[in-house]
Amino acid sequence: MKDYTSIEKAFPGLNKEYRFAKLEEKGAQRNPFEQFAQWLGDAVKANVSKPNAMIVSTVSAKGMPSSRVLLLKGFDEHGFVFFTHYTSPKAEDLKTTPRASLVFFWPQQERQVRITGKIKKTTRQESVDYFRGRSDDAKLASWISAQSRTIKDRGALEEKLEATRRKFKGKEIPCPEFWGGYRLFPTDFEFWQGREYRLNDRLLYRKTLRGWKIQRLQP
Ligand SMILES: Cc1cc2nc3c(=O)[nH]c(=O)nc-3n(C[C@H](O)[C@H](O)[C@H](O)COP(=O)(O)O)c2cc1C
Image (cartoon, rainbow, N blue to C red):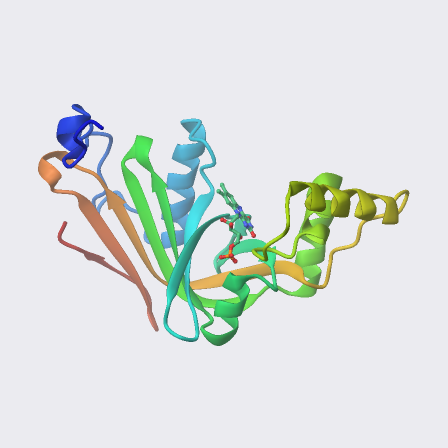
């Protein structure tokens, strides 16, 4: 095999200078949700694939961290919402440690956003409202999957899908009790913008009793 011990040598051109934009205190939004909306909008405009994909990290009762990609489905001044199975490993983690971290990475913009905070389930009504807007296939997929449990093979999954399709034929597919949303209530946001000479811009927004305090972090 070729020598990959240094990926910079194995793939010349891998490490480009960051030159896309800057993030300075003057131009930044005072409200981190507004700043986030602006950056997400930039990623959408640039046709980034899955710009709302985020890495969500949770911690188990034993202190073991785990991370996975989820899609952000909405946010407002209170928090960031995603949907999943309430019987999944991440949901088990959130039962004992209701805190999480989110990371968005938009490589074309040379940007990262890190968000941390407490987590709560969305209301049942919010989950039901969101579920209603999903396609029938997505609804059925939520019903048949015992998320992250093992299964014999793909055929067994397809059989479950067909049986569930028959069960709900001609009826509205309801939102399963074991499926729904979580909302992360941020206490910290860090916006990272790649800059020339590795002097990257990093602004930390921390929630205080008097509103959001903004501080610059060293690269
Ligand atoms: C692009 C992408 C989007 C995903 N979106 C979701 C999602 O919104 N909800 C979800 O439960 N899983 C989603 N997944 C699957 C999760 O990454 C993960 O496999 C699953 O939630 C099980 O996680 P857990 O075993 O840690 O609970 C997505 C995966 C990818 C790659």
